[in-house]
Image (tube, rainbow, N blue to C red; front, side, top):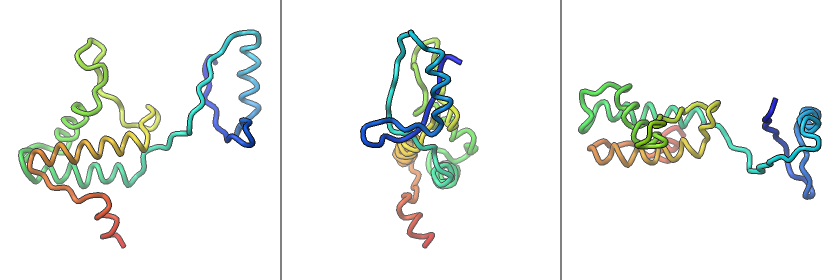
Length: 139
């Protein structure tokens, strides 16, 4: 137990932890030792609507249009993920970042991936209905 992630709020300039007991247990183990603390706004997991938009409106549209005709949905998804989620490009450690919440893929990451995906498939002759228009159609 060398590393912990703790959640809470800042109230009147002080940290109020959701689970103070667990925090105190971690702090006790570090008694007398130097530590590193990173404080940041809690990230939000990607939403079902983001994942749904990615697969239904970008990947599926690309299966039926433009330069991707004849590709499978998995091939298009893989191509786009390799293009936009590859980390450590050109090194032996090159890998494609996971889109799972457990791997730290956030709502903001999904938004960026969707934006890049729309632009890329558009360059290949694929038209995607913008998310804002999709929301209007649901109403």
